[in-house]
Length: 88
Image (cartoon, rainbow, N blue to C red):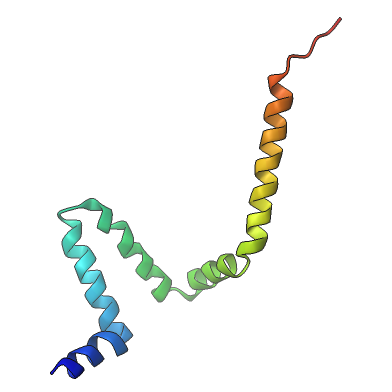
């Protein structure tokens, strides 16, 4: 009996995902934090959104360097703007 339940819950992704979505839906009525988690099912339904998510996760290192450059630029700009400019 355990093997049948395990096979249905673990190896069948369609059934497993719907059980998880039902869990989030039922718990969403007690705590609203569960409702946004249900939006992650959109990735399964839309191949375009799945490709967008894959393009972000595949290039995570490069995006990290861009974010680092952005932070450096903000710090430099903040330091330049914090010093008063004296016009004689």
